[in-house]
Amino acid sequence: MRSRVWNMAKRYDRNLLHTDKRFRRAVQLIFEDGTMQFFHECFLMHHKDSNGVEWLCRFSEHHGFDVIAMDELKGWQQFKQIDNNPETLK
Image: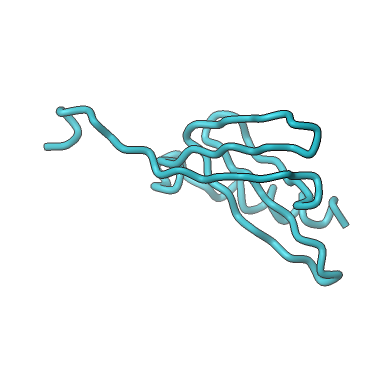
């Protein structure tokens, strides 16, 4: 089933533009073994397949995409990044 969700995410990723405002977020993933990953310019999408298995799709402007089964994760967070650059705040 993972390959089906992965193919769906791949099609979605191909249609994303680098100007998509959702890339103004950051994501932290915490895996069951305690490993943590942090991505800038990234966002998450939740997907539940027809068998009831829940997946988290991670889309990143610089690191492509990934599909993770929710039961592999201990936790996750998604942050909105704040632009403090005075030149872009005008």
